[in-house]
Image (cartoon, rainbow, N blue to C red; front, top):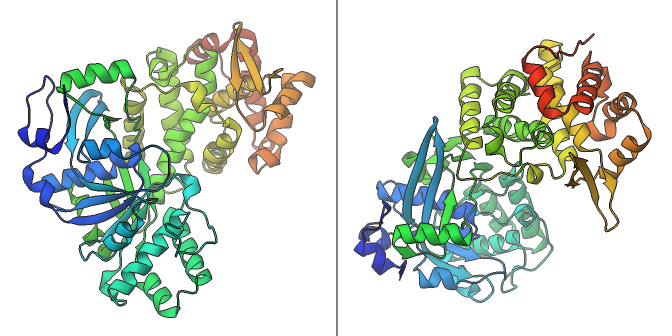
Length: 512
């Protein structure tokens, strides 16, 4: 089986699977983007979108990638001329989607450790317009260091060195600033990165002219990316897929069909990021992207957080298999659209929220991805606080009543947190004779409560704990009584029987 290379791509061999191959003209496009990071999220979303735009003649630019860390190696990119296959697998509007695209948006990959001089030289390229990054959440942190290091240790330090080199190369030309779009999964990532870069510029005494140029000529954009990109499949699955493709690809990247890249920017930003026009339903450029952050946080993440315990206690290991169960599928649907959507603490048009919710359900049903509930359960208490409590409070402000799907999911979470300390460290719970890990910073707190309190006292104590939730949730009319009722039913009947009775209307908590 041949290795994926430029030569193979231009020959466009006929494999058993359909593949979208790049045209020869794509390899001659100028380098317009500097990207920090080689991870699968970047390859499966921004890089693929730029490839898509290039195929339509809309952006006409390629990417120079900086490998910022010492881990891994560059050999796969070198052997494959920076080409890789994106295998899109998912469900859209209830229908399965399978697509294979050989992505040619990356021109070359440079090592920050050994090729820093080349990276600084590229900073002076007049074609350069955009910087993209994904250096993980810990990448956007202030580290006091000299930008004269080769290279600076931190990502903000490297970025500042690039910007300073560009400033000097073009003598402070205000037309040579860049649009900088971090995709790290932290709120206000662009604003935080800009603040760190400015502080680091002051600490490096880079002068007022450069700092003025840094602030006025460059655009640091907050952004939100949303796409599940597992990357390379398991060895057996990868071998089968590559046999179907007809070539070997060390960088084969699996991704779901759904994609969103929301970018905070104005018309000037939109003009530079012209690749957005290739997929306007995916790349959304607006002055305010909080709507998309709220929809993802409350409907996707919040539904995960309020469903994992009930699904696990009912014996389901993955999100997808849970959606094959009549009662759990109904619970997830109604929780999301009846309780969480009306409780989003941000103005959302109902049709927009409903559409987003249906897309989330398609993603949950994706037969190609395995979301394990136990993985979702990690640090559930912190997730519950951030993702769901604001929704609960807003729901009460709007309706003044108990959201029952929310209450049942919250009660199941309390039962999931019933655990004991393990001899080797950590905590574990048990359901139907099977042990499961409880990975949560508050595991010891819940273990102690379960050891010394009745379900009623435990529920009251947990809801009262403002250190956990920022509020005394006992003050929400009827919520504590419903929680106690559902928790006792789960203890007595189990999760599956509780769900059955819940939807048969034989089990309805009475709130006062």
